[in-house]
Image (cartoon, rainbow, N blue to C red; front, top):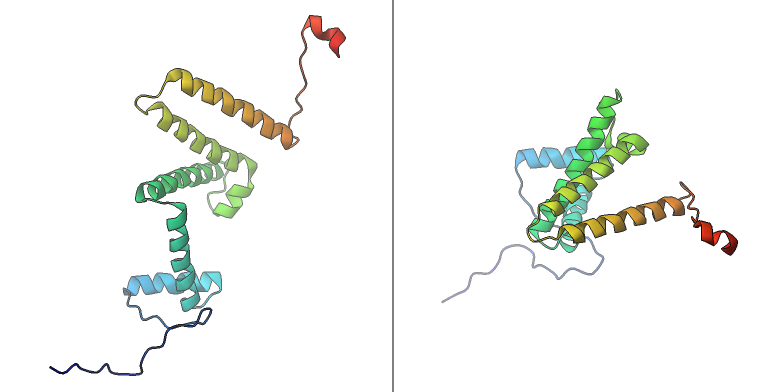
Length: 168
């Protein structure tokens, strides 16, 4: 039995750091989307494809399961939806994500919508203790106040009782 010899130039093992060719077939729609993204980002088609592939591998490291990735995307979607809604309410429906995120009101509404959705998730969890949840919410409240103080947004003053007046 004879083995058929491969046609073409023999392949070499890639040298680390060297660019190598990758043959890839995609649909016409995917090629158009890739070309459009490459033009918008000032990259070649090849650079855009490599960037997006690299991001997908990074996502795998961040989101260790499909469920985690889905959950994170849903929360990001809530943030974007509320921020865009706020911009539209302010008469700026045309604002990009960058623009509405720079607006303190829109960013705050988006952030608190995500926090609210997280609280709803926790409240609907079976077996979670009401007391534990209330204690954790108080802890979040205290951390939020500390972050505001650290950012110089508020000043925390110690409150002393009548008996403590001489202790100052």
